[in-house]
Amino acid sequence: MRFSLQQNQEQQRGRLQDAAADYNRQGVSAILRGADHEAIYYLLSAAVCEPDYWLAFYNLGNCWAKLSENQAALWAYEQAVRNCHHHAPLFLNLGIVCCREGQAKRALPYLEQALRLNPADAKCSAALGFAYYGLGEWGLAWHWYNKAFRLEPHNADFKVSMRIMEKKISDG
Image 1 (cartoon, rainbow, N blue to C red):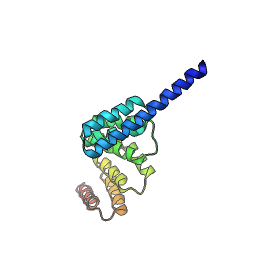
Image 2 (cartoon, one colour):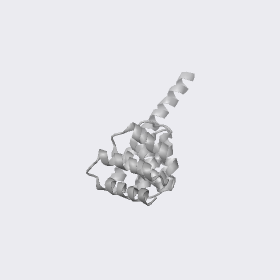
Image 3 (cartoon, rainbow, N blue to C red):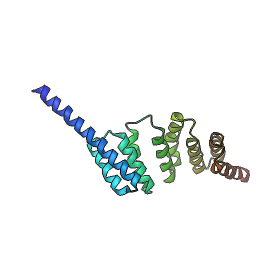
Image 4 (tube, rainbow, N blue to C red):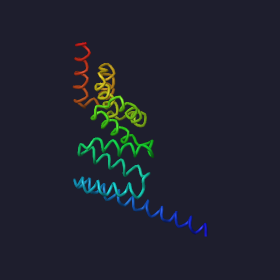
């Protein structure tokens, strides 16, 4: 009898995981169609089926961030981080949303993790520059924008950000 109960629980768990993956796929499809509110429904359904399914929370955070629902995006990304330590875009997006909310200091560990996971991504360096800019650390902001520019020398935004930091530094 015990084996039967355990087997039933494992089968139920497998069905919930399959349902979560299906809801996640439907949510991503809705995002790609621009149906963000529909996507939120599907992604929340995925999270209910499988509370440890980091990918659904990541996609949910992306959707809410796109809608400028930053507090909701923070919550979703933080749920994703509980079960994912390897996806640089998750940490990058979480750090960016923290910065949007005026929480640059809180963003730093997330952005540093994104950079550790993907050191060749100029966006990670630029996001660190933006965080240090938010903290009023002009020299560190310049350093990270410069690193981003070295990684992507064709990106004019990085060059402009460096010039802004140079002006801040020279104005003292």
